[in-house]
Length: 547
Ligand code: GLN
Image (cartoon, rainbow, N blue to C red; front, side, top):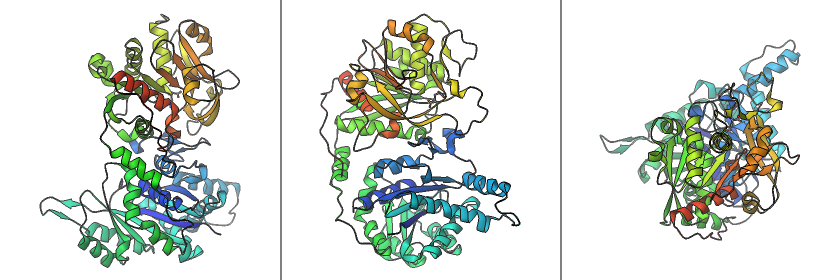
């Protein structure tokens, strides 16, 4: 069977939730027994988002194979419980790079290279590559940006051609738009949606489903009006009111019947009646009133919560298993440097220091690690969070004054964190970090090994610096346990502190592998320790959200 394609486009404004919508549709199709895969087509010219500041598009998500991707790939993996590969992420930068390299090689000798057909053909080839690299029955393809943007045009042209190439029965289009609300007249307006659909039709794409996002309930007359003006079946205009809980969206879309409308369009019969029991149980658990634990997330991009999206999700997943809500306090590490840190960190049940780059705010993170160690506050350090834990220990326990990472102080007398040997002499910044899945052996008898329940793990990485082994012995003699090492014993992957309720850090990013149906052991450990600190009953629920 050929892979059928469902395309998702966005209208009116950006950030309407195309990624979550596509991921939710994926979940609903999986619930009917289909194998699905997902791809994001990003219209920006960067080859990948790896060199972008998190302020631009939120966190950079990392796949098993080391691809640095848009955060929507995280939604896809979490909602559909998939492990995606490089073929799931395409940017304009990659497409042009490929075409220009071919031109320089002489592959097109004699030809003029143009957006149509060379760029559009390369986009189509990449969609095709995705379908052929998996056994998926259905591939969901999200076009980034908003219809009408100059840079989206080649993508829209390519997907229009794909409908022609493959035929109507093998392709469907979902358009996600925004209905603005006017307070002056107390009205929700459909006109921008009509314009956006007109724009889409002008490039030859007729949407099969319109998802009308809104902050307020959408009356039946409004969806009928959209159906009439946009030439879409009435039941295929699906209002989607902003939800408090992302994980509720698949249930809302299920109720609206989106999966059946799309399957009908694609002439597919469900392989089994939808099984969503696990997901429903999960949402019901999430909605139950629960005691909450106060978690301080100390980072430098805290104004933009999407910069730490996977960390936040991983905390939520783990909290669910302990029957608690996460009261997440976003704490700026630069504020900790300026103000009295006790005021900012007091009263927390646990602290998390996530990844980061560059020296801004790093001293605040070092002070945070010191506070957590001295006050025995549960602490989880992720990547940079491990590095600052080591720097703090070196300075304040080992007495190595001015110890630092050579990332922040090239002349430090004690570079306890140093550039990895393989990284030295690299001149290219893009895609050259230590990226993706690497194995790590856990030391038996450590907290980390206990939490994982195994002695060999695989986790996703994204870093250039590492713990400097010249200091390993000194650290160990003073109470630091290197609980996880690369299997050859060379690279420190995990560290934990003796005589502390929970001070654990990893050089890798566990947040990228956490799923609602299997919370990550390191986050579970943190939440358990936080519950103890908060004086809450510590009981891990035996929840099964698998289906
Ligand atoms: N800047 C540090 C490094 O490159 C940490 C990276 C991170 O936290 N992802 O090693």
